Amino acid sequence: MEANSAQTITRTRVFDALKRYDSIISQLSKRDKSASKSDSSAGGALQTLEQLDQWRLRELPETIEQRKKEHDAAWITKEEVIHLTRWKLKHGKFRPTLMKLVSANGPEYVEETTRRAFRAHSKNKQLPSTAGLALLCTLKGIGPATASLALSVYDPVAVPFFSDEAYRWVMYSDGKGNMWDKPIKYDNKSYEEYFGAVQAMRRRLNADDQEEKVSAGDVERVGYVLGKEADMGIEVGGDQKTQSDDDTGKQDTIEDDVHRPTYGRKRKSNVDGPQDPTVEDPSISSTPADAVAKRRRTRRG
Image 1 (cartoon, one colour):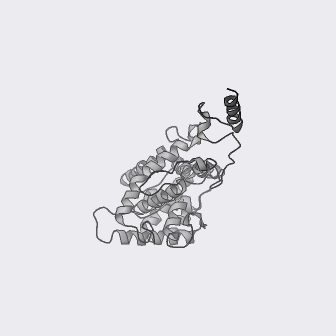
Image 2 (cartoon, one colour; image 1 turned 90 degrees about the horizontal axis):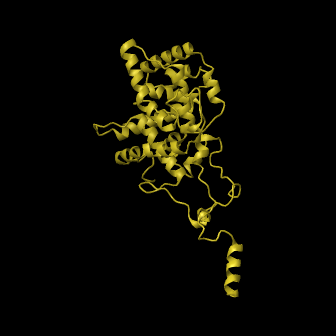
Image 3 (cartoon, one colour; image 1 turned 45 degrees about the horizontal axis):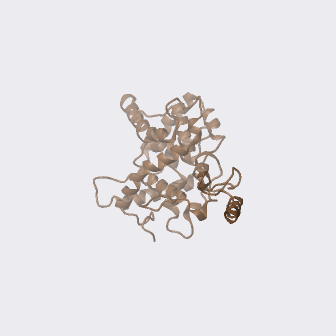
């Protein structure tokens, strides 16, 4: 069993992976071409994955905590649900109809539903799908994955977001084959199993009563880092693999994961002309015909 298996990973490796999270988000954010397009519903500042990620992990949880103190209750607004959905689409697979569905929810219904869901979760944190998840799934466009995202900003210590990478790492890393290609059922039962496995990981990693506890959010982000590093061809503790002379036809598919539902599909290398990065150098022949002509000129000379 490899060192980064969810079943055997050490606290040291967990915190090492967490240190790489911001770099992964930054790389994906720079590749996100959709962030440069105008979006009237984006709220101005929250355009890129990097901006949305900071907001999801820091600003929104702080806003929720402030509401608890001032109103003795917690909720999120329709605009905040839209931002969370936008983060989810940039963070993982793009689904073109999801934003339209989520935007169809009424503002008052969103606030009342999230208020009830957070209250239910606070009363029974051990059963997230029956204590909040089902309520959130009554919103249009909200399934178990997006519902878990909303609960994770309310309770980031105990609730992990139902992401593809984190789920596959936690649930499949002790099995055979490539865990990153295995299918996922996006239902309450799958989330319950994932939630339980994350709590078991936390108990193991925090068993020695360490001062710095591993949260469910930490586990989620470690899974995301390891999944994206595998996808990007980055060796753990090393650098991203570069394109070799014998591999010029292969294309990076990270953008497909962020923008379009074509995850893992390679584009044809001859669509937009030659892919060899050396062809722009005028000192290097770009075609076989150039080389033949050069040899003829040499013979005549």
